[in-house]
Image (tube, rainbow over all chains, first blue to last red):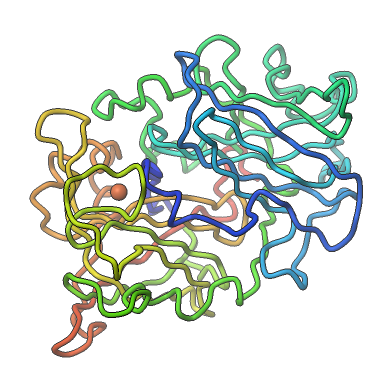
Length: 180
Length: 229
Ligand SMILES: [Fe+3]
C-alpha cells in the first residue's frame, strides 16, 4: 500500500491530446428524458476558466450503472472542455435515483471530475438534477450540510430540459468537493 | 486514519511554487463520503475505442517525426498489485523541440508537421501497454524567471473504477530540470516523486532504431478509500 503514482496537473495543452469526438454527448443503450447540463467554471477571483476538462459519469435513466455495450465509447460517460467563457455543456439523459449497498437513497445526480491547469489533482463532486427538497436524504447532501446548495443544478424556467450548474473552485460559494 | 492518510502521495491543491494554484485551489475541506455505487464501478470502453495506430505516434504524419525515437512500455497495477486490465490510457506530449501541436502554445520552437503528440491504448490482460513515440523536449513556461519544464509525457488513466481515474506526468531519469520543477516537486514525498520517473530499459527498444523505457503506473486499490469501503 502507499505505492500509488501521484497525480499531476493536466496543464494547459490537453485539448488536442484528449479530444473525443462528440465527447460531450453521453451515450446510453436505452432511451430516456433528454437533458442538458451546462454552466461555467470559475476561479477564486471570479474569472471563467478556459482550460478545464469536465468529465461526468452517471447512472442510466433506470438508476443502474451503465455496463459495456455496443457503443465504442463507454456508456454513461462524458468529456467536455470549457470554452473561452469557461462554459461546459453536456447532453445526456436524466439519471435515475438509485440505492446504495447499505440501503442509502441517492437522488438523481451526476458524478463530476474536473481537471485544469493549476489543479495538481482533480476536484470531484456530484451534482443533483433534482429540487433541493428531493435531495434531503441523499448521503452527500446530508454530509455537505449548508454547502449542499452548491451541488444543486437549477432547472431553466423556460426550457425544462436545461439544468444550470456553475462550479466555483475557490472563494465565496466555493463548490463542495468530495473525497470518497 | 486510513493507510492513504499515513503517506500523502498526491500534491496539495495549494502549492505556492506553482502560481496557477493560487486562485484555483479549493480552500474548504473536502467532504468525505462513502463512494456512490457509480464511483466503485467504472466506464467500459470497447477495445475499438483505441485504434492500433494510436499506440504509435511516429506514424501519424507523412514521414517520421524529428527527434529521438523511443518505445514506452509498462504495466498499470492497483495498490494491491493486481493488473488493471482493459483500461483506457491516453497520452499527450510536445514534440522533440518542446512545442505542442496546440493553438495556445506560444513557445518559439518549431512545430513538426509529422507529429501530433496524441496517443491512446487499452491495457492488456496483465495491465500492460506499449507506445512508440519520440522523446519530448523541455520547454519554457512563465511560472517564474528561467522556468523550464523537464521533458515529460502527460498520461490520463481510467483504471477499472471511477475512483481510480487519474492524470499524471511521466519524467525521464537524471533530468537536470527535475530538482527545480515546481510541478514535479509538488509531490511531498521524495519516494513518490521518483515513481513518476521512467527507467531506461534497453531491451524494450529496437536495436539501432529506438530507446526503450519502462514506466509502471499504480492506481488506487479497491480498499483504499478514505471511508475504508
Ligand atoms: Fe506539458
